[in-house]
Image (cartoon, rainbow, N blue to C red; front, side):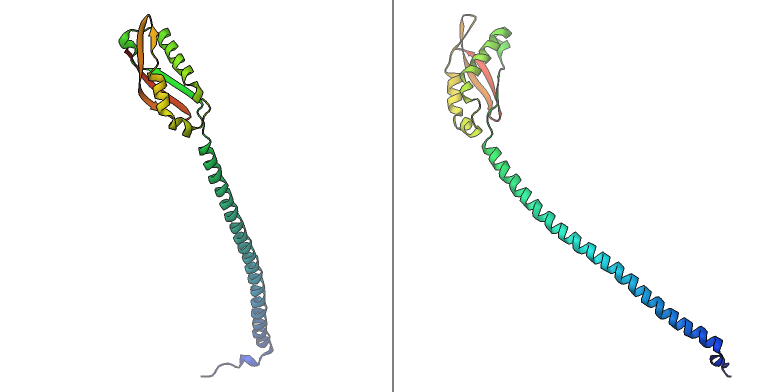
Amino acid sequence: MRIPPLYRRPSWQRFFSGMAIGGAISWCIFLYIYGVWQEKNSELIRKQQEDIVDLNNEKKIWQEEYKELNKRNIEQLTVQKFTIKIINADKYKLDLLSVLETENSVRDDISMMLAKDLDTVYKSRDLLKKTIENKPVEINKKRYKLKIKEMVIYTNVTIQLEIQFE
């Protein structure tokens, strides 16, 4: 068996040479397009990496400043308000006006601690306790003394008091 001698015909020679030249040209176009695409992507990746590094550095700076501000703010927390409550006033059948006046007099006695920082108030909690407990209170011509049941010290100092006969 013989292969037909088509390679000698000029039309077939042009066809095969056109295929070879077309393949080479398309390969060159493919390499050019792929190279341009890779170059754009590598530039984008490089830019994103730089942005990531910049943002990480900026984030570290913000976190350090935030931690420093928090430390300063914690050190500078001050007492804003006193909340005083007498919890067993109904046991002695005291009227609300007398209870309110007693709470206000206690608030006036310890108002020196208003706008002090929390550390100072915490260190002087024994003084606060003695100031409240050593002062007799007169309600309806009867003498009472106050006893601290619970004291919570934060920006709002909450004190729960019990009232007793003196």
